[in-house]
Length: 139
Image 1 (cartoon, one colour):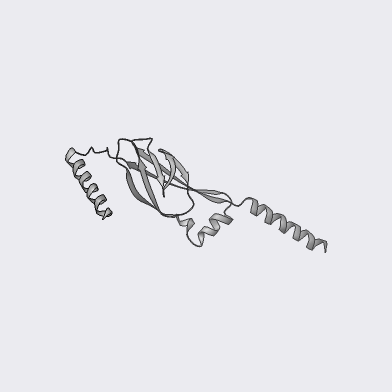
Image 2 (tube, helix red, strand yellow):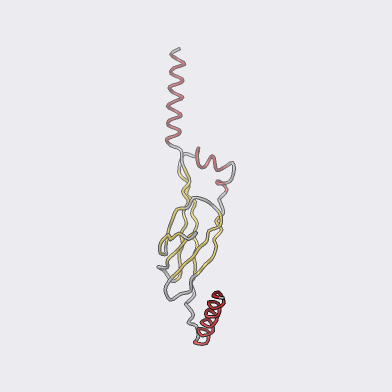
């Protein structure tokens, strides 16, 4: 009876120790821009000014919007694919059983174009179009 109790206690201690040292996966994105200090948005959420580092939870397609005064707003997508250890069934071992932390880091650099100043003719034609649309809605 004592041997069985000792075996159960040992098993419980080993389970607690195993659970306390299990690892996890940290996922981070790093975005740099040219010029630096541009405002960065991921999926319509402001994450900071470049160079920016942020954690992410899921893999897939991210909407990226980058803005800076004097430059054209950049709207694009960034497909982030999982590493081999984040595919089924390997993700269970990486997330639950691996005795340490894995760091999955993705980085991307974006270049912004200088803003174009429209000519006077372009401004007038856009104003005329807007006026026509406004009057057409009223009818």
